[in-house]
View: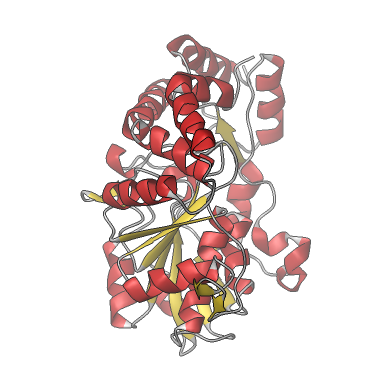
Length: 367
């Protein structure tokens, strides 16, 4: 079986380093808010190119805390609007509605799969306070036009960088392009922990301090609570694991790019399409999506050949039961993507033989 993502294989690449780091934490007797967190936050800030990193429990919380902090700082209030791509994973939307803010869904560009920057300005109203871009599939969603619109209308530009660790736009890392960014370290991410984990990156000290307090019960000083916060902290073991894997992130992303290049150069089946190629430094290939009107048949065909695939994502946010007030909305590009997308195997431990087999089988589909 060619796995969609071989997590065991990825972990085993750095097993001795991870074991050593985890053992150090166990022996230290300090398991929360300690040296490992500080070290990882410093290293991640240096890597991303921001002044501050604040570890938290997961990627969803990272986005929630950004918007909650802006509310606490008096820069937003419930009922304000946030522009967001319609074809994102549900977490991007949940972070907005969790804070009583209103998502304004904007269609993606079918060629890039990212928010269509030509549609953003017409979605801006007097209630708009932020644009949330999502670097979906590991592809950079930032454009100079989006940056200019954020400045023109004084909007907070927030990045959902859950799928794009190490991605760049003109020599700047995603996660440093806007006012703040949320990062997920779910095990399957390009930079994945051995459990849940997340972080916020920003250059704004007030925002960083507010988020750090909110994620620690609302406390700025022990037993003193400024906010109604929650417990959302990155533990020392996960911080230690992430610090080990961070050193190898660029190397792992290059492995993903090599597989993607092979796919682009050798997939030749008229029943299948894939998104427009962008500069390699602007794509870390968290997902390699292809599109097929016979998506379910293709997935079953690959399964019969012992090739595992996934669908990202079968139901778009506006068709989910939890947002039933949107169920009648028509977003044809988003719906087309969700109805036809299939994610091919790609990982830092995937072999050339496995990649060649995937291509050979796909090229034979429908013959």
